[in-house]
Image (cartoon, rainbow, N blue to C red; front, side, top):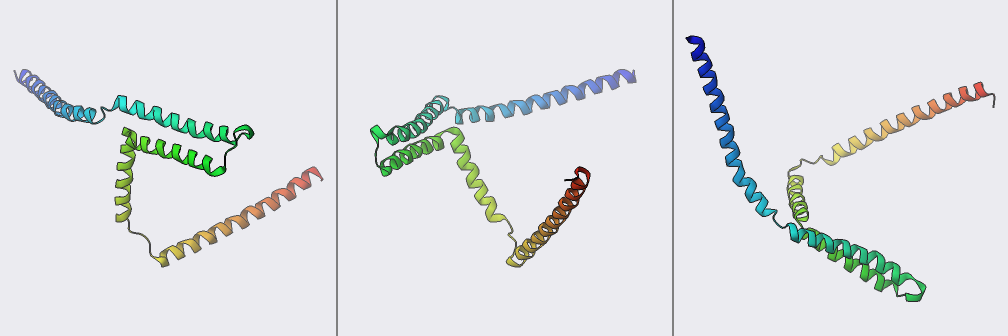
Length: 159
């Protein structure tokens, strides 16, 4: 009889755990749906990426076209053309979902950099001197190793 109760209690525990996991999944679903709505600019993103590709192609091809002897234009016109195309591509890139994520990441990174405890001038100087000394010692070791290996190679090959 007790074995039936134990099995029944284990089954109840398993059912409760599954019910909790389903509740967790159900509560996560609306958040996922709202994320999908935020990222629902699929057609706009495709259009913007197409504009980016066209702008970059126009910059490259325009610069090439206007640098040919038959269509030679002053350098400042080519620079304006290339910078204008790059500006259009950059603005379009920042309007895409990936661009918005990049801007958000940059803002968060800037905030993190403000919270960093930077070393003092004295600490930086001491660390730089330590690195320079270690690099010098390793350079001497490598030079010495090269001389010794070169000596033995010359000894073996009789050059």
